[in-house]
Length: 208
Image (tube, rainbow, N blue to C red):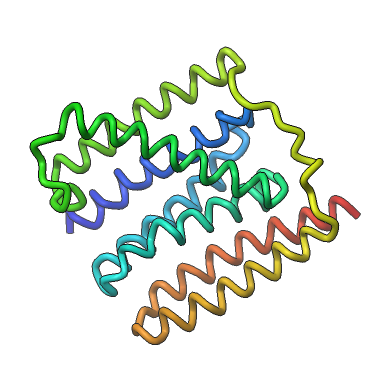
């Protein structure tokens, strides 16, 4: 009983910290997107847990999480998809650098394969999150970061492409998970895609 709770709690803290860091790097106000970010973080980590425990497909979890970050930033933060990709990948890489540095400094003696299911792994996630949130606060407080003109990279009819990509991702993921008898993961993808579709359609109505 404790293991799923531990995994979701510390993984959600980690995901939210990474999300906050990636927004802060580009001077985007984190507080405006806390609730959508928290909802998607929970879905990401539920997906990661189910893939790890039931499908032995944990290697796919980071890639799927990155795609969800891109869609979240595109549809909720309303940044063009090209910039969303840059923000998501750069932010994820930056958080990974922070976590790797902490792991080498304080958890060098812990076997890497045991971190995902150990107290030491949770401690690493918590420490990495605290450092990432500290960096986030510092960047926002002193207005440090990239100030890009996102609109220059917005494609015409981009919202149509976002919706199409969401639908394609849902179909592909559903097929993949169905073949592995993962009904719960399919439900997760439906919830995630539903959220992104809602924001994408609302964005379209606001623009026209």
